[in-house]
Amino acid sequence: MTFYIKKEIISRLESDVKFRLGLSFALGVVPQAVYNFVKKYNEDPYPNSNLTKKAALEFFKMEGYEENQVLTEKIPAK
Image (cartoon, rainbow, N blue to C red; front, side):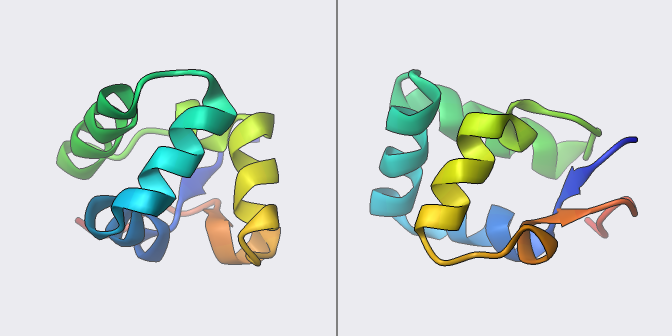
């Protein structure tokens, strides 16, 4: 199956530095890498990105999101 990240999560990653920093720690990458993932995803959403990895989904769950609040099978609107 292919999954996309919902626009609400992308928007929060763009605007919330602490949220983005937490995700970068969960993925084991520098914060700039998460910023680049988000920027690239905004330009052209693609399925099964780094933002859908198990570590990312666990981070979102720790932040209070259910899987259905994060993932979608439909391409999100730009």
